[in-house]
Image (cartoon, rainbow, N blue to C red; front, side, top):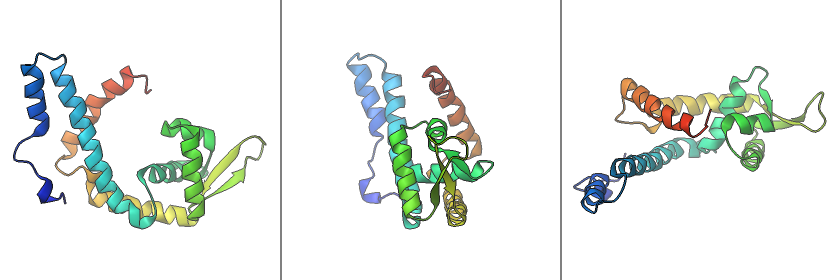
Length: 168
Protein backbone atom coordinates (compact mmCIF):
# COMPACT_ATOMS: atom_id res chain seq x y z
CA UNK A 1 0.00 0.00 0.00
CA UNK A 2 1.24 3.48 -0.81
CA UNK A 3 1.96 5.90 2.01
CA UNK A 4 -1.18 8.10 2.21
CA UNK A 5 0.94 10.91 3.65
CA UNK A 6 2.61 11.32 0.27
CA UNK A 7 -0.57 11.60 -1.78
CA UNK A 8 -1.11 14.82 -3.65
CA UNK A 9 -4.50 16.34 -4.29
CA UNK A 10 -3.65 16.63 -8.00
CA UNK A 11 -1.74 14.70 -10.66
CA UNK A 12 1.69 16.36 -10.82
CA UNK A 13 2.44 14.89 -14.24
CA UNK A 14 -0.77 16.34 -15.70
CA UNK A 15 0.16 19.67 -14.10
CA UNK A 16 3.65 19.47 -15.60
CA UNK A 17 2.15 18.76 -19.01
CA UNK A 18 -0.21 21.73 -18.65
CA UNK A 19 2.73 24.01 -17.77
CA UNK A 20 4.81 22.51 -20.58
CA UNK A 21 2.08 23.39 -23.08
CA UNK A 22 1.58 26.86 -21.57
CA UNK A 23 5.27 27.61 -22.09
CA UNK A 24 5.18 26.30 -25.66
CA UNK A 25 7.85 23.72 -24.94
CA UNK A 26 8.20 20.84 -27.40
CA UNK A 27 6.72 17.35 -27.10
CA UNK A 28 4.49 17.80 -24.02
CA UNK A 29 2.66 14.50 -24.56
CA UNK A 30 5.95 12.60 -24.89
CA UNK A 31 7.31 14.32 -21.76
CA UNK A 32 4.20 13.29 -19.83
CA UNK A 33 4.45 9.71 -21.13
CA UNK A 34 8.12 9.36 -20.20
CA UNK A 35 7.55 10.91 -16.78
CA UNK A 36 4.58 8.58 -16.21
CA UNK A 37 6.63 5.54 -17.22
CA UNK A 38 9.48 6.60 -14.95
CA UNK A 39 7.15 7.13 -11.99
CA UNK A 40 5.36 3.82 -12.65
CA UNK A 41 8.77 2.11 -12.73
CA UNK A 42 9.61 3.54 -9.31
CA UNK A 43 6.28 2.34 -7.90
CA UNK A 44 6.64 -1.14 -9.42
CA UNK A 45 10.19 -1.62 -8.16
CA UNK A 46 9.24 -0.54 -4.65
CA UNK A 47 6.33 -3.00 -4.55
CA UNK A 48 8.35 -5.85 -6.08
CA UNK A 49 11.33 -5.21 -3.78
CA UNK A 50 9.06 -5.40 -0.72
CA UNK A 51 8.09 -8.95 -1.77
CA UNK A 52 11.56 -10.11 -2.88
CA UNK A 53 13.71 -8.59 -0.11
CA UNK A 54 12.74 -11.21 2.52
CA UNK A 55 13.89 -13.91 0.07
CA UNK A 56 17.27 -12.24 -0.40
CA UNK A 57 16.42 -11.24 -3.97
CA UNK A 58 16.27 -8.14 -6.08
CA UNK A 59 14.24 -8.06 -9.28
CA UNK A 60 17.44 -8.45 -11.33
CA UNK A 61 18.43 -11.57 -9.37
CA UNK A 62 14.88 -12.91 -9.61
CA UNK A 63 14.97 -12.48 -13.40
CA UNK A 64 18.28 -14.36 -13.56
CA UNK A 65 16.83 -17.23 -11.50
CA UNK A 66 13.72 -17.39 -13.69
CA UNK A 67 15.88 -17.50 -16.81
CA UNK A 68 17.85 -20.44 -15.40
CA UNK A 69 14.66 -22.12 -14.18
CA UNK A 70 13.18 -21.95 -17.69
CA UNK A 71 16.35 -23.13 -19.45
CA UNK A 72 16.37 -26.71 -20.72
CA UNK A 73 19.14 -27.93 -18.43
CA UNK A 74 18.81 -25.36 -15.63
CA UNK A 75 22.07 -23.77 -16.67
CA UNK A 76 23.32 -21.16 -19.11
CA UNK A 77 26.62 -19.49 -19.97
CA UNK A 78 26.97 -16.15 -18.22
CA UNK A 79 27.34 -14.37 -21.58
CA UNK A 80 24.09 -15.83 -22.86
CA UNK A 81 22.36 -14.77 -19.63
CA UNK A 82 23.51 -11.18 -20.18
CA UNK A 83 22.24 -11.18 -23.75
CA UNK A 84 18.85 -12.61 -22.81
CA UNK A 85 18.45 -10.34 -19.79
CA UNK A 86 19.74 -7.40 -21.87
CA UNK A 87 22.24 -6.32 -19.24
CA UNK A 88 25.97 -5.64 -19.10
CA UNK A 89 28.19 -8.67 -18.40
CA UNK A 90 29.31 -7.10 -15.11
CA UNK A 91 25.67 -7.02 -13.97
CA UNK A 92 25.32 -10.74 -14.68
CA UNK A 93 28.53 -11.49 -12.80
CA UNK A 94 27.31 -9.48 -9.81
CA UNK A 95 23.89 -11.16 -9.81
CA UNK A 96 25.41 -14.63 -10.10
CA UNK A 97 27.90 -13.82 -7.32
CA UNK A 98 25.06 -12.92 -4.99
CA UNK A 99 22.86 -15.83 -6.05
CA UNK A 100 25.79 -18.19 -5.53
CA UNK A 101 26.46 -16.76 -2.06
CA UNK A 102 22.79 -17.38 -1.21
CA UNK A 103 23.02 -20.97 -2.45
CA UNK A 104 20.56 -20.37 -5.31
CA UNK A 105 23.03 -21.03 -8.15
CA UNK A 106 26.48 -22.47 -8.56
CA UNK A 107 29.06 -21.90 -11.21
CA UNK A 108 30.27 -24.78 -13.34
CA UNK A 109 32.84 -25.13 -16.08
CA UNK A 110 31.41 -25.53 -19.56
CA UNK A 111 31.97 -29.14 -20.64
CA UNK A 112 33.36 -28.28 -24.09
CA UNK A 113 34.49 -24.64 -23.88
CA UNK A 114 37.10 -23.94 -21.23
CA UNK A 115 36.62 -20.18 -21.64
CA UNK A 116 32.94 -20.32 -20.68
CA UNK A 117 31.42 -20.45 -17.22
CA UNK A 118 27.92 -21.74 -16.65
CA UNK A 119 25.48 -20.62 -13.97
CA UNK A 120 23.42 -23.59 -12.77
CA UNK A 121 20.29 -23.23 -10.64
CA UNK A 122 20.28 -25.32 -7.46
CA UNK A 123 17.29 -27.10 -5.96
CA UNK A 124 17.14 -24.31 -3.36
CA UNK A 125 17.16 -21.79 -6.21
CA UNK A 126 14.25 -23.58 -7.85
CA UNK A 127 12.31 -23.49 -4.57
CA UNK A 128 12.94 -19.78 -4.01
CA UNK A 129 11.98 -18.85 -7.58
CA UNK A 130 8.68 -20.71 -7.13
CA UNK A 131 8.08 -18.96 -3.78
CA UNK A 132 8.99 -15.56 -5.22
CA UNK A 133 6.82 -16.05 -8.29
CA UNK A 134 3.81 -16.99 -6.16
CA UNK A 135 4.36 -13.91 -3.97
CA UNK A 136 4.75 -11.63 -6.99
CA UNK A 137 1.63 -13.16 -8.54
CA UNK A 138 -0.28 -12.29 -5.36
CA UNK A 139 0.53 -8.60 -5.92
CA UNK A 140 0.25 -8.86 -9.74
CA UNK A 141 3.93 -7.95 -9.96
CA UNK A 142 3.10 -4.60 -8.37
CA UNK A 143 0.75 -3.58 -11.17
CA UNK A 144 -2.26 -2.83 -8.97
CA UNK A 145 -4.83 -0.91 -10.97
CA UNK A 146 -4.11 -2.73 -14.24
CA UNK A 147 -6.36 -5.63 -15.15
CA UNK A 148 -5.13 -8.16 -17.70
CA UNK A 149 -6.55 -6.24 -20.66
CA UNK A 150 -4.91 -2.99 -19.53
CA UNK A 151 -1.61 -4.78 -18.88
CA UNK A 152 -1.73 -6.23 -22.40
CA UNK A 153 -2.37 -2.75 -23.86
CA UNK A 154 0.60 -1.30 -21.95
CA UNK A 155 2.81 -4.13 -23.19
CA UNK A 156 1.65 -3.62 -26.77
CA UNK A 157 2.15 0.14 -26.64
CA UNK A 158 5.65 -0.12 -25.20
CA UNK A 159 6.64 -2.83 -27.67
CA UNK A 160 6.70 -0.29 -30.51
CA UNK A 161 9.05 1.96 -28.56
CA UNK A 162 11.27 -0.99 -27.62
CA UNK A 163 11.39 -2.17 -31.21
CA UNK A 164 12.25 1.34 -32.49
CA UNK A 165 15.12 1.43 -29.96
CA UNK A 166 16.52 -1.82 -31.38
CA UNK A 167 15.60 -3.83 -28.29
CA UNK A 168 14.77 -6.83 -30.48
